[in-house]
Amino acid sequence: MKPTNEAAITFLSRSANEGFARTTAACFAAQLDPTLEEINDIKTAVSEAVTNCIVHAYPDRLGKVSMRLRLFSDQLLEIQIKDWGVGIADVEQARAPLFTTGGEERSGMGFTIMESFMDGVKVRSTPGKGTTVTLRRRISIRLGGSV
Image (tube, rainbow, N blue to C red):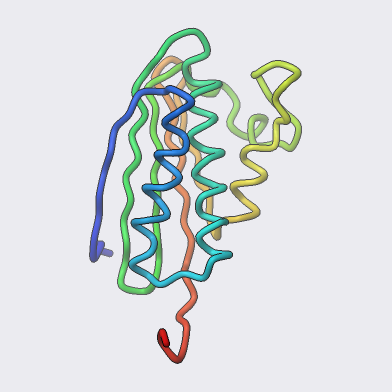
């Protein structure tokens, strides 16, 4: 299926850029006329994915993070967040609630949160080469339009 619109950005794995990524995703998704709840869900999932890159992919250095946003004709939003960091040795273990490699200050709920706010979450990772997280959310069609 071919996207009806798409955008891509690349930024450093600085914590200040997490908010930038959240806002970018929300602005892009606004084309689909989402509800405030849908926007907040998208922002939360993007925040978790980007924070994973910052904390886990590059634990001792800065690195690149890319975010690719795509819209499809059936109200589907796809957001792909990619890093070229340390990668994940066991993706299933990393997706388990409360599992973390980020120390005791981390909750280990990132993937669980992403899964609860999105319709689909796909994780591909290669140790030493990085991780790609693909988030998908279908935005509801609102009847009646704006007033």
